[in-house]
Length: 231
Image (cartoon, rainbow, N blue to C red; front, side, top):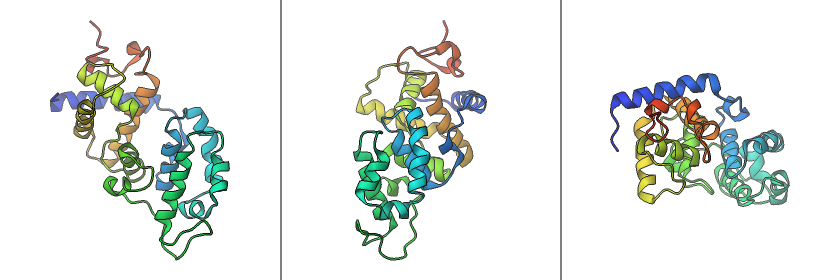
């Protein structure tokens, strides 16, 4: 659907006002370090925030940057991840670190003196092992404050309910494309506001616009919502 500039402004203003007072204090929100942002995003895939809060600082203490992770043995990475499940995430993260840290990286260490930096461009990030469209957008937005969308399950649910009047959990490919297009239209052009906007959308989906029994009465964007709007 098409949204007017006024609709986008109202939605964004209500969302950001709510986020300013309701946002959880999460450790990965206190950093703009690309590696730390990436680790949090990979851990948060298919894992509850409470579990990630436990593992995140321990993993970073053991592997504080991409080069230290690239140097690690696969077994050491698996041990640091043990208990989080979905171990392909750890393997992909390890492979990503090796690729970014420089060519010639093997299990025995890192060759050369290349600087290990993640790219800023989502189109470059998505080429790395284990990085999908959402994670590429999240790293670009949360680490580099790029005004790009980051649509995860929570964000897709919020936007679908608010703008399309649909609360179905399974979205067609066409609906997904429309949601990404809508998210791109909604994202503020200023990088700092874009960071807050993406975080706020995810927070709303995690705390209020939940999959089952959404808390519509508590929703800050209910006046704009086609699904939960009061009669």
